[in-house]
Image (cartoon, rainbow, N blue to C red; front, top):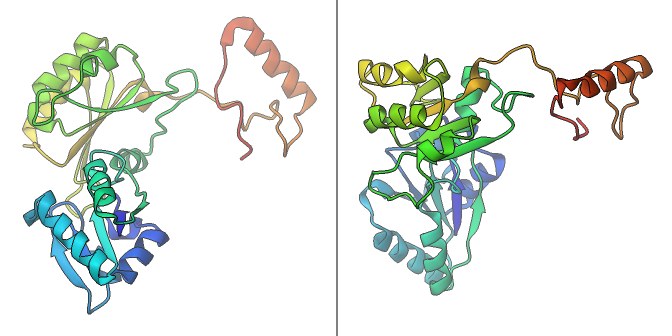
Length: 275
């Protein structure tokens, strides 16, 4: 059995491995409400196709068990990346109990897709070098203590907030309480990579009004943080004064870079890697 990450929606964001898993499957289970139907073009004509939107975990496990008994290949298509809010772990544990072997094919997360659409790097040198992936507490799934948005906001770095559009007022309040200023940039993305895609730019101070104006309450992701509006910074990696295993540093640029660093400019990030 293969759990397939389908990405944020667009069928052409499937990986080659994901498309191959779907093509080889005798049974394809997909989330019709979260994954575009075009992904099924990879399925065989004789494959059994089932919509997981109508199925409970117990219903799905019956299919897994039958497939294992009959030697059938199953592709379970998940939206986004199965590692994030995919209900993956409970399936893995039950499959282990049933003796069903599982392969997981990672997918493009919606936060990566939204950053690409917005044409923003989320880790900008001297501004933000971390990305926090989280959701607002108080919904169907309780948040562990200490994982509230207001607590994560105290870091002041880039945040990707999932599953929170229905409580945009609470989200804005917690972001402000955690320390973001009202003018902190926000990208609001609805149905990213779908035909209905809507990408808006606002601030923490106008977040609630923006969400309510466009009547967004599901399928919406928020990117928050100063990196979304930063410019004029530069990484070490492509600086002529930086060297690595594949490139020598220009001596004059190297001296200038070292002087700038010792003069209090601080690290400009990106030192490392061999690209």
